[in-house]
Length: 411
Image (tube, rainbow, N blue to C red; front, top):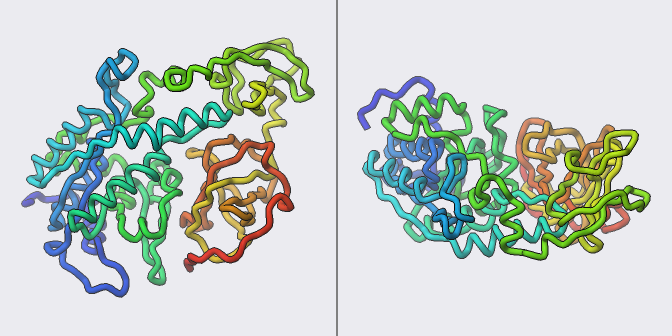
């Protein structure tokens, strides 16, 4: 590109010389390698595209249009800053590609997004759990649809702007935490399969956010100062209750607020107004602070109790996606929320892609519907699963261990 890049780009560009390379396959030069970059219109993916282009790859930008932000379909509201994947983000991605002089494609995935992500979001809330729609989007839309389209264009690799690191110890691709732990996004990628991981790469894992912004500015990208997206794209103004009620009016069915002993202490206008761990908006009069400790969708009961009732020594997960060693029981580090500090635990594999997780010391507050993501002490992501309601959590006798897991890695 003829631009003098700052020193922070040296390590990244050196590593970019290996994009698309896989053990046992003939090496290709960047000029012979086609890279499709998943572009959201933000600074991270834009910088990833610019770096790939600067490294000499045949670079193609690709953007998903997932949600219609016109007021008619968005609760009467226009698109707000802090959300993602909207029409102005598509425009920003296209403008970046024009700046770089690379092709840009837009895939309209609104229908698939509604059935694969929004419907799951609504159903999860109706079940009394708290969803993570960004994970479902990565799993069911971005990595699935983008990867298939990239391959159809003859791409050798799909690149994203996530803050994670990919490595090939002993010939097997693994995901590691980003160097900048405050920006690490491995938690949101726990559903990535081994086949997908072999084909996807992440060039920003060794950079910090300020470094990425500085690179974007140096590369002449107009998005270098663009604010990060935090809100869920289809939840205008952060009002998730309105979204759930729009697609499931029955969500407003009233019910009782009860103590753990079953005493009715109040009433509610729908369980979607409550999440496990919530303290605000509960009936007063107790001698100590009370929290939501369980939500029972079948009886529409919101159960409250003292803080210590939130603690769990063990819990179970479903839909376990496992990239770790082929063992039935393993000592791991587990994160039970995106911003949670990983703590030691033992993972025991159960039948039907389930697992039991036993904390090594003390108890932790777990929330049904959230994800439990497992790591080695060195920060390699081993996989993860969805936390099941606490009434399903029980000692290991509830499920028998399965046979060995077929994918293994060595640290």
